[in-house]
Length: 228
Image (cartoon, rainbow, N blue to C red; front, side, top):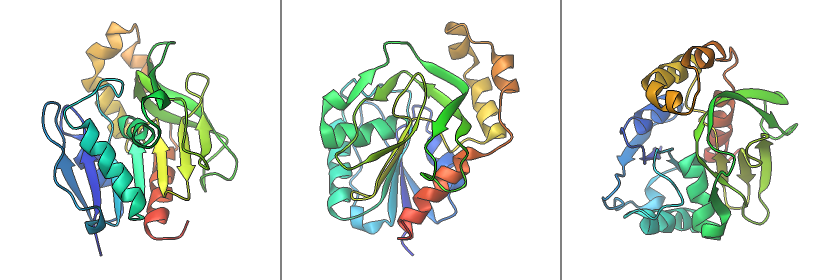
């Protein structure tokens, strides 16, 4: 069984481990750092690829951006399913559509446990309204031709998309966090929340009982298994 590759673009280097720990499948992580090179990876060595979130901005060109985009395109050509989370979600659309597909959100950032509308029937097990973990400044404004937007919010019209032809799933929110791990991360991000006038205690209290993120991760695993 080929492992799933988690490409970790996070500044703290914790996303790869966090995502891999939530996947019910053998997984390996590869770290990508600002100023560094994208690792030499063979798409065909993996049953799927997850591109993680990051505190980096997708609207800024990084040392690894061009090679990361090539990896996305190579996986599409070789029929390797890919999931993008936050920065990774934006990276999928940047790689396939160019810089016009991503932007800085003019309304400001989206932080906290916040509701998204999930389109009926799009992701098995989800409700029409799910509360998910959000932390982003940038967003996608266009998805590849033939892809379907499957979730949205008032702030971000493309909260998630599914492209069955290219075997892509993108989520602007972070499905790797459940209520416990998500609140733990918000505690670590306390100063950032304070800078934006967001009360940490209110955020922690709003953590949902439902683990909607697990449903999106399972949807991706269905793609990996060839069930979708």
